[in-house]
Image (tube, rainbow, N blue to C red):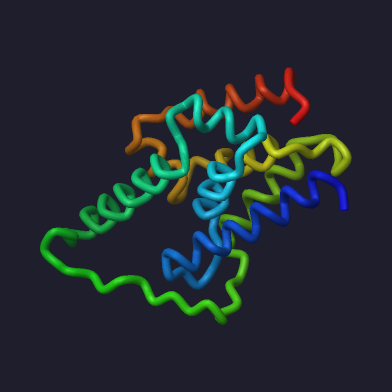
Length: 160
């Protein structure tokens, strides 16, 4: 296996762990973002941490997004005590639509698999105007387009 294959497998495996931790039925783009943030030693990880988006900061932003989304529907988290997510370690999680699209966008952002790098996957996760990831980034005070520009700069100047 190539280094990028190992990286993709690690991100997918960690994304599944993140989805399980949430009690989700599918691995979505925000789970991949958490996985990318947790995987040290890449330009993608470096871009995120330089933007103040370590794994915990992203988790906090996602929690705020969840609360904000409930608030938009007229539900206040402080009014209810939600049970912890049900975590079934034997449940096979699907790749959700947002994760599938993020991977597709990441793969298409480069000239071919031989040119694929971790930052391309991050770019695929960030390159959407709708969904959990852009809402969470906005609530965290991060301009998604600026972060994407930084990822593109990194792709132009760094190899891994």
